[in-house]
Image 1 (cartoon, rainbow, N blue to C red):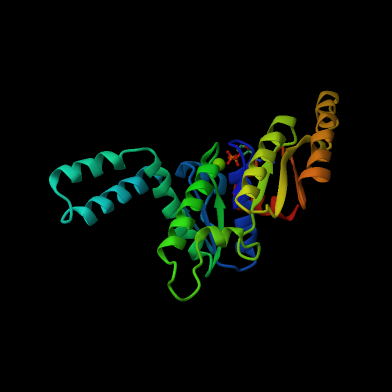
Image 2: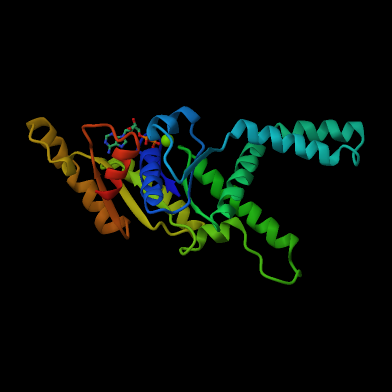
Length: 255
Ligand SMILES: Nc1ncnc2c1ncn2[C@@H]1O[C@H](COP(=O)(O)OP(=O)(O)O)[C@@H](O)[C@H]1O
Ligand SMILES: [Mg+2]
Protein backbone atom coordinates (compact mmCIF):
# COMPACT_ATOMS: atom_id res chain seq x y z
CA UNK A 1 0.00 0.00 0.00
CA UNK A 2 1.49 3.25 -1.12
CA UNK A 3 0.20 6.14 0.97
CA UNK A 4 0.67 9.88 1.13
CA UNK A 5 -0.77 13.24 0.23
CA UNK A 6 -1.84 14.13 -3.31
CA UNK A 7 0.96 15.10 -5.65
CA UNK A 8 3.88 13.56 -3.71
CA UNK A 9 4.25 10.76 -6.28
CA UNK A 10 2.12 7.92 -4.93
CA UNK A 11 0.91 6.78 -8.34
CA UNK A 12 4.44 6.97 -9.72
CA UNK A 13 5.97 4.96 -6.84
CA UNK A 14 3.12 2.40 -6.86
CA UNK A 15 3.43 1.94 -10.63
CA UNK A 16 7.21 1.65 -10.38
CA UNK A 17 6.98 -1.08 -7.70
CA UNK A 18 4.33 -2.91 -9.75
CA UNK A 19 6.39 -2.76 -12.96
CA UNK A 20 9.47 -4.02 -11.11
CA UNK A 21 7.57 -6.97 -9.57
CA UNK A 22 6.01 -7.81 -12.94
CA UNK A 23 9.54 -7.81 -14.39
CA UNK A 24 10.43 -10.49 -11.85
CA UNK A 25 7.71 -12.67 -13.37
CA UNK A 26 5.32 -12.24 -10.48
CA UNK A 27 1.61 -11.89 -10.97
CA UNK A 28 0.86 -8.30 -10.10
CA UNK A 29 -2.29 -6.28 -9.73
CA UNK A 30 -1.98 -2.51 -9.56
CA UNK A 31 -5.03 -0.70 -8.27
CA UNK A 32 -5.92 2.93 -7.63
CA UNK A 33 -8.83 5.18 -6.75
CA UNK A 34 -7.35 7.91 -8.99
CA UNK A 35 -9.12 8.78 -12.23
CA UNK A 36 -8.40 6.12 -14.87
CA UNK A 37 -6.60 8.62 -17.10
CA UNK A 38 -4.04 9.31 -14.35
CA UNK A 39 -2.78 5.73 -14.14
CA UNK A 40 -2.89 5.30 -17.92
CA UNK A 41 -0.72 8.39 -18.25
CA UNK A 42 1.81 7.12 -15.70
CA UNK A 43 2.08 3.58 -17.07
CA UNK A 44 1.87 4.37 -20.75
CA UNK A 45 1.01 1.16 -22.56
CA UNK A 46 0.10 -2.24 -21.12
CA UNK A 47 2.86 -4.07 -19.22
CA UNK A 48 3.09 -7.90 -19.55
CA UNK A 49 2.06 -9.65 -16.32
CA UNK A 50 0.59 -6.49 -14.83
CA UNK A 51 -3.17 -6.21 -14.36
CA UNK A 52 -4.52 -2.76 -13.66
CA UNK A 53 -7.79 -1.84 -12.00
CA UNK A 54 -9.49 1.16 -10.52
CA UNK A 55 -11.91 1.53 -7.63
CA UNK A 56 -14.61 3.87 -8.86
CA UNK A 57 -16.12 5.35 -5.68
CA UNK A 58 -19.29 6.59 -7.39
CA UNK A 59 -19.93 3.24 -9.10
CA UNK A 60 -19.19 1.30 -5.89
CA UNK A 61 -21.66 3.34 -3.87
CA UNK A 62 -24.36 2.86 -6.54
CA UNK A 63 -23.81 -0.91 -6.45
CA UNK A 64 -23.86 -0.93 -2.67
CA UNK A 65 -27.12 1.09 -2.44
CA UNK A 66 -28.86 -1.02 -5.09
CA UNK A 67 -27.78 -4.17 -3.30
CA UNK A 68 -29.04 -2.95 0.09
CA UNK A 69 -32.41 -1.95 -1.42
CA UNK A 70 -32.76 -5.26 -3.26
CA UNK A 71 -32.01 -7.24 -0.10
CA UNK A 72 -34.65 -5.35 1.88
CA UNK A 73 -37.37 -4.87 -0.73
CA UNK A 74 -39.47 -7.84 0.37
CA UNK A 75 -38.81 -7.39 4.06
CA UNK A 76 -39.73 -3.70 4.46
CA UNK A 77 -42.91 -1.71 3.89
CA UNK A 78 -42.91 1.27 1.48
CA UNK A 79 -42.27 3.81 4.25
CA UNK A 80 -39.39 1.91 5.78
CA UNK A 81 -37.92 1.37 2.34
CA UNK A 82 -38.08 5.11 1.66
CA UNK A 83 -36.29 5.71 4.96
CA UNK A 84 -33.58 3.22 4.04
CA UNK A 85 -33.12 4.88 0.65
CA UNK A 86 -32.70 8.23 2.35
CA UNK A 87 -30.25 6.83 4.88
CA UNK A 88 -28.18 5.27 2.09
CA UNK A 89 -27.72 8.72 0.55
CA UNK A 90 -25.56 9.70 3.55
CA UNK A 91 -21.93 10.25 2.51
CA UNK A 92 -20.62 7.69 4.98
CA UNK A 93 -21.94 4.92 2.73
CA UNK A 94 -19.53 6.02 0.04
CA UNK A 95 -16.65 5.16 2.36
CA UNK A 96 -18.26 1.87 3.28
CA UNK A 97 -18.72 1.02 -0.39
CA UNK A 98 -15.15 1.97 -1.28
CA UNK A 99 -13.92 -0.04 1.66
CA UNK A 100 -15.81 -3.14 0.55
CA UNK A 101 -14.22 -2.87 -2.89
CA UNK A 102 -10.85 -2.40 -1.22
CA UNK A 103 -11.40 -5.43 1.03
CA UNK A 104 -12.08 -7.61 -2.03
CA UNK A 105 -8.70 -6.60 -3.44
CA UNK A 106 -6.86 -7.17 -0.14
CA UNK A 107 -8.28 -10.68 -0.14
CA UNK A 108 -7.00 -11.20 -3.68
CA UNK A 109 -3.46 -10.61 -2.45
CA UNK A 110 -3.45 -14.21 -1.26
CA UNK A 111 -2.88 -15.22 -4.87
CA UNK A 112 -0.96 -12.32 -6.37
CA UNK A 113 0.95 -9.20 -5.49
CA UNK A 114 -1.44 -6.30 -5.08
CA UNK A 115 0.01 -2.82 -5.24
CA UNK A 116 -2.45 -0.22 -4.01
CA UNK A 117 -2.13 3.45 -4.70
CA UNK A 118 -4.46 5.01 -2.15
CA UNK A 119 -6.33 8.25 -2.76
CA UNK A 120 -5.10 11.57 -1.38
CA UNK A 121 -6.35 13.69 1.55
CA UNK A 122 -8.21 12.20 4.46
CA UNK A 123 -9.34 9.23 2.44
CA UNK A 124 -6.71 6.97 3.90
CA UNK A 125 -7.84 7.72 7.42
CA UNK A 126 -11.47 7.16 6.54
CA UNK A 127 -10.43 3.93 4.98
CA UNK A 128 -8.70 2.81 8.15
CA UNK A 129 -11.66 3.99 10.18
CA UNK A 130 -14.19 2.05 8.16
CA UNK A 131 -11.78 -0.88 8.23
CA UNK A 132 -11.85 -0.63 12.01
CA UNK A 133 -15.64 -0.51 12.17
CA UNK A 134 -15.92 -3.46 9.84
CA UNK A 135 -13.33 -5.31 11.88
CA UNK A 136 -15.34 -4.92 15.09
CA UNK A 137 -18.59 -5.78 13.35
CA UNK A 138 -17.15 -8.94 11.82
CA UNK A 139 -15.75 -10.03 15.16
CA UNK A 140 -19.09 -9.42 16.86
CA UNK A 141 -21.03 -11.31 14.24
CA UNK A 142 -18.72 -14.29 14.44
CA UNK A 143 -18.27 -14.33 18.21
CA UNK A 144 -18.80 -17.83 19.51
CA UNK A 145 -18.36 -19.26 16.04
CA UNK A 146 -15.64 -21.87 15.82
CA UNK A 147 -12.57 -21.28 13.68
CA UNK A 148 -10.32 -18.31 13.07
CA UNK A 149 -11.51 -15.09 11.51
CA UNK A 150 -9.24 -12.96 9.37
CA UNK A 151 -10.56 -9.48 8.73
CA UNK A 152 -9.06 -7.04 6.23
CA UNK A 153 -7.69 -4.96 9.10
CA UNK A 154 -5.85 -7.99 10.45
CA UNK A 155 -4.38 -8.54 6.99
CA UNK A 156 -3.19 -4.94 6.83
CA UNK A 157 -1.71 -5.15 10.32
CA UNK A 158 0.20 -8.31 9.42
CA UNK A 159 3.70 -7.22 8.31
CA UNK A 160 4.17 -10.48 6.41
CA UNK A 161 1.05 -9.81 4.35
CA UNK A 162 0.96 -6.04 3.90
CA UNK A 163 3.79 -3.56 3.50
CA UNK A 164 2.78 0.08 3.87
CA UNK A 165 5.01 2.61 2.17
CA UNK A 166 4.72 6.27 3.13
CA UNK A 167 5.64 8.70 0.36
CA UNK A 168 6.68 12.29 0.95
CA UNK A 169 8.67 15.00 -0.75
CA UNK A 170 11.75 16.37 1.10
CA UNK A 171 10.09 19.51 2.43
CA UNK A 172 9.10 20.35 6.03
CA UNK A 173 5.31 20.51 5.57
CA UNK A 174 4.92 17.31 3.52
CA UNK A 175 7.16 15.50 6.03
CA UNK A 176 4.93 16.72 8.88
CA UNK A 177 1.85 15.53 6.99
CA UNK A 178 3.43 12.16 6.37
CA UNK A 179 4.31 11.93 10.05
CA UNK A 180 0.66 12.60 10.95
CA UNK A 181 -0.34 9.82 8.54
CA UNK A 182 2.15 7.44 10.16
CA UNK A 183 0.79 8.32 13.61
CA UNK A 184 -2.76 7.55 12.45
CA UNK A 185 -1.64 4.24 11.02
CA UNK A 186 0.12 3.36 14.25
CA UNK A 187 -3.07 4.08 16.19
CA UNK A 188 -4.68 1.41 14.00
CA UNK A 189 -1.70 -0.84 14.84
CA UNK A 190 -0.25 -0.61 11.37
CA UNK A 191 3.52 -0.06 11.22
CA UNK A 192 4.77 1.40 7.91
CA UNK A 193 7.44 -0.79 6.27
CA UNK A 194 9.37 2.05 4.67
CA UNK A 195 9.33 5.66 3.55
CA UNK A 196 10.07 6.95 0.08
CA UNK A 197 11.37 10.49 -0.21
CA UNK A 198 10.41 11.38 -3.74
CA UNK A 199 11.49 14.16 -6.05
CA UNK A 200 14.68 15.03 -4.19
CA UNK A 201 16.79 17.78 -5.74
CA UNK A 202 19.64 16.91 -3.38
CA UNK A 203 19.68 13.37 -4.78
CA UNK A 204 19.65 14.79 -8.33
CA UNK A 205 22.96 16.60 -7.59
CA UNK A 206 22.25 19.78 -9.57
CA UNK A 207 25.04 22.13 -10.71
CA UNK A 208 22.89 25.24 -10.95
CA UNK A 209 23.41 27.64 -7.99
CA UNK A 210 19.73 28.19 -7.24
CA UNK A 211 18.92 24.50 -7.48
CA UNK A 212 21.86 23.72 -5.20
CA UNK A 213 20.49 26.15 -2.67
CA UNK A 214 17.11 24.44 -2.80
CA UNK A 215 18.84 21.05 -2.55
CA UNK A 216 20.56 22.17 0.67
CA UNK A 217 17.18 23.10 2.16
CA UNK A 218 16.19 19.43 1.78
CA UNK A 219 18.95 18.11 4.02
CA UNK A 220 17.15 18.87 7.28
CA UNK A 221 13.81 17.23 6.36
CA UNK A 222 15.70 14.24 4.88
CA UNK A 223 17.68 13.83 8.09
CA UNK A 224 14.45 14.04 10.09
CA UNK A 225 12.90 11.20 8.08
CA UNK A 226 16.06 9.10 8.29
CA UNK A 227 16.85 9.55 11.94
CA UNK A 228 13.47 10.00 13.57
CA UNK A 229 10.60 8.79 11.42
CA UNK A 230 11.37 5.87 9.15
CA UNK A 231 12.70 2.36 9.61
CA UNK A 232 13.82 2.17 6.00
CA UNK A 233 14.21 5.01 3.52
CA UNK A 234 14.54 5.15 -0.25
CA UNK A 235 15.35 8.48 -1.87
CA UNK A 236 14.16 9.07 -5.44
CA UNK A 237 15.79 12.01 -7.23
CA UNK A 238 13.84 14.68 -9.00
CA UNK A 239 14.09 13.39 -12.55
CA UNK A 240 14.55 15.64 -15.53
CA UNK A 241 12.56 13.15 -17.62
CA UNK A 242 9.16 12.62 -16.04
CA UNK A 243 9.03 9.00 -14.79
CA UNK A 244 6.26 7.80 -17.08
CA UNK A 245 6.12 4.59 -19.10
CA UNK A 246 7.27 1.09 -18.09
CA UNK A 247 10.96 1.66 -18.99
CA UNK A 248 11.45 4.74 -16.85
CA UNK A 249 9.37 3.30 -14.01
CA UNK A 250 11.49 0.16 -14.01
CA UNK A 251 14.65 2.29 -13.99
CA UNK A 252 13.28 4.30 -11.07
CA UNK A 253 12.67 1.11 -9.05
CA UNK A 254 16.19 -0.12 -9.74
CA UNK A 255 17.59 3.19 -8.52
N1 LIG B 1 10.85 11.69 -8.96
C1 LIG B 1 10.15 12.42 -9.83
N2 LIG B 1 10.78 13.26 -10.69
C2 LIG B 1 10.08 14.02 -11.56
N3 LIG B 1 8.73 13.99 -11.66
C3 LIG B 1 8.04 13.18 -10.84
C4 LIG B 1 8.71 12.35 -9.89
N4 LIG B 1 7.75 11.64 -9.22
C5 LIG B 1 6.57 12.00 -9.73
N5 LIG B 1 6.71 12.92 -10.71
C6 LIG B 1 5.65 13.58 -11.48
O1 LIG B 1 4.88 14.37 -10.58
C7 LIG B 1 3.49 14.30 -10.89
C8 LIG B 1 2.69 13.81 -9.69
O2 LIG B 1 3.05 12.44 -9.43
P1 LIG B 1 1.94 11.35 -9.07
O3 LIG B 1 2.65 10.05 -8.95
O4 LIG B 1 0.79 11.41 -10.02
O5 LIG B 1 1.49 11.87 -7.61
P2 LIG B 1 0.26 11.41 -6.69
O6 LIG B 1 -0.24 10.08 -7.20
O7 LIG B 1 0.82 11.34 -5.31
O8 LIG B 1 -0.77 12.48 -6.83
C9 LIG B 1 3.38 13.40 -12.11
O9 LIG B 1 3.32 14.21 -13.26
C10 LIG B 1 4.67 12.58 -12.07
O10 LIG B 1 5.07 12.14 -13.36
MG1 LIG C 1 -2.16 9.53 -7.79
